[in-house]
Length: 334
Ligand code: TXA
Ligand code: MG
Image (cartoon, rainbow, N blue to C red; front, side):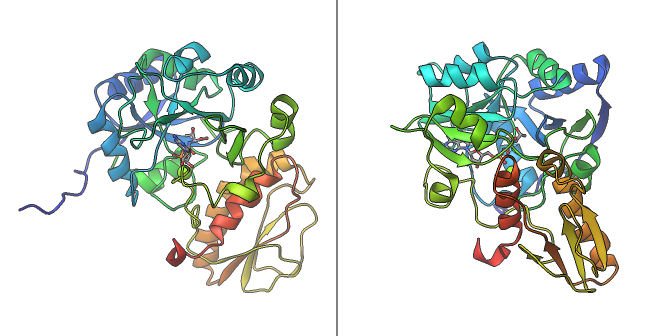
């Protein structure tokens, strides 16, 4: 028989974010296991980035349609920059935003130990130093780069809590290290520094305004996100609930679930308000949990769509709008 085998079923441990749990998670990762862990953005599905077999396991557990390049995670700037050819601008950005929700794409260092599979054979590498004591302590204990895409089945809503990870991947991964809900709630901002000008590949947890304050001019995401061949992870359809999503709704029907922001539209069959006060930071942190809730509860009640109220185009609003646009793109256009 030559047909590909699905990943063998395994028991998924739920680990507490105490010393013993962190040590167990680190040992599993060092042994080639798949361990989901919380970061300040979303939960990542981690594997030893220097181990091709472990990295291949990430793709099969997620059911990824292709080998997209993965972000390598590090406990500190020195460990991260050992894998790439850092530039002066990379150092300035690292000083300003690490640890934190920023990913830098740079040419790989000749001595980089990251597997070609994790880097998808590209001459560049995406690196990041995530925030949070549990995350950094885990990465320090692993002592190797940890590759980690968001810990959800490919194309589905990203996880911002350990329960979300288990809902999608239980039985397919070795463990989830539960560090509670993620503070930022949307993925890191990805900036490509390997070109003549810095290019924003993905809006995320560091806003464009804050980036520009350090970088100066930066190519705008809407000009580039769908065009750049070096961001193969940017599928148009992504983060998709099962119910169709309708954007920029100014009215809502009783057969729709409403993803509200600020003052709620009336008349919806079900409501999740991202932030009644209109805070974009709060809205980002509540986005993926809200999409999950409206999708599952909405379907249970027989609703037919999710209507999303307009989100302003500043601060984390850009990242939220990007994720909602992908959630609204039918999977058939992938
Ligand atoms: O917040 C985050 O970034 C989360 C947490 C777990 O760290 N991770 C995450 O990973 O969102 P993932 O695999 O879902 O998204 C990685 C993004 C993709 O858009 C991918 O194309 C891009 O980073 N990327 C990775 N390596 C790249 C490279 N060498 N060149 C260009 N883009 C790259
Ligand atoms: Mg993802």
